[in-house]
Every structure is written in structure tokens, then in C-alpha cells.
Amino acid sequence: MKQLEILIAEDNPKDFEFLEQLLSSWDEKVQITRAPNGRVALEMGLHRDNPLAICDIQMPEMNGIDFARSLWEKQPEARIVFWSQFKDEMYVRALAKIVPPETVYGYILKSSSRERIASAIRTVLFDEQCWIAPEVRKVQGRAGHSLTALSDIEYEALLDISLGLTDNLIAQRRYLSRRGVQSRLNSLYNKLGLDQEQFHCEKVGDSFNLRNRAVAVSLARGLINAFEMEHEEVEFQAWFKRYQLSHKAK
Image 1: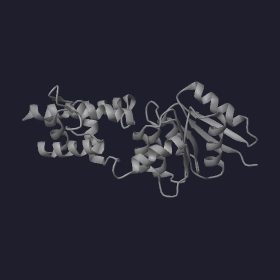
Image 2: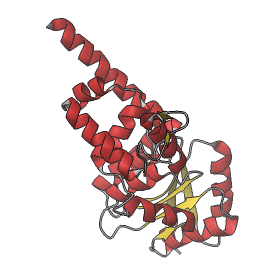
Image 3: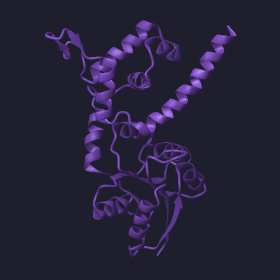
Image 4: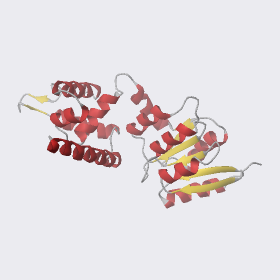
């Protein structure tokens, strides 16, 4: 029987130990290699033929989505099982954009039963068929629906207001007019099902702040989360330094 080589990209030792014990209990011969983050996993995966991987999504150095994107660019036949405690829409949205045609992959939640996790791994890595957790399929439906799915520019606007950027700063960063910024924000609010009238209170004579409300709704939907916003903050700070230097030079 041919021995399968399975790469596990997981920074949590306990989660890795769980997978290692699970795979070692099977009758099939399995060789297991651990990568503590996505960057190391990518280096290992690129040196394998038809790599098989189980990959966490939230990892240091390089997250699971970026790992899969980079690996699939070089090896589209790679089969990957994403396993995560998150079914955030931002991950489902990002994943939908990077899966190559006819590529086999899976998405299983860490909270699933041992039997379901085993079934997902077997289906993808052994049977060469896709396996998506039912909870994730529901999110896929919302993320793919024309009335609720955010476009790239709407998602960009969401990131900007989540970072606390003013209209002027968004305009500078995205090369837009103020009217262009407002157009993007209004489109975002519509997709999130928000409008000024909906949150207007006649007795108080005031309305909700739609920017803050959009961020709150997006957090609840999983369109943004604290882990990924740390990365967005780093990118923004790098841009802001360049922006300040360019204005000092003028």
C-alpha cells in the first residue's frame, strides 16, 4: 500500500496532536509532517508532488488562505482541507476567489465531532472529492447571493471605515473623490441592509451612526474579525507613512 504524505499546517500544538492521533489510528499508511505556520507550510508544499495538506486558517506569518493561494498558483492539483474554529464570511469570500477550477478541497470546523472531521479528511485526501461543512455552506450561500454579497470595492470601503478612516483619508488612499467615497459607502450600507430612515428615532430626533452600525453588522456576519484587522492595520500604517512623507516633500 502506498504511503500518503500529509502536511499539517497548524500553530497550536494540541490541535496538531489531535490530528496526528486521528491519522495515526487509521489502517492506511500515513506520513505526517507539521508546519507551525503558513509560510513554512508553503516551503514544504512547493517541494512535493501533488501535495496533500490540512491547514488551519488563522496562523502567524501567513494565514491559511494566503498559503493555499500561493500553493495553488504553483500546484493547482494540491488537495487541501481547511480546518478552523471559524466560519467567518470573510474567509469563505476569500476562499471562493482562489480555488482553481476542478480543484478538490474541504472545509471542516474544529468544533465538529471526531467522526465528521475524519470523514472530511478522508473524503478530500483519500477519495478526491470536495467536502464542505453544512455550517460553512450556509455562509457560502449568503456570500454568493447577489443581494447580500459584497463587491470588492464595497469590501474595501468596509475595511476603511473599520480602520476609522475619514472620507478625506479614504479618498486619498483609494484615489477617489469625496463623492466617490460616499457612493461606495452608500452601496455598502445597502448591501448590509442599513439605511438612515431605518435607524431614525422621531422622539429622540437622532439617528444611528451608519459607519459604526456597518462595522457592528459586519462583525456579527463575520465579514471582518480582530485577527485579520491586525494585518489590515499594518498595511494601512505602511501606506500612511508613505502618504505623510509625500506631503512633506511637497
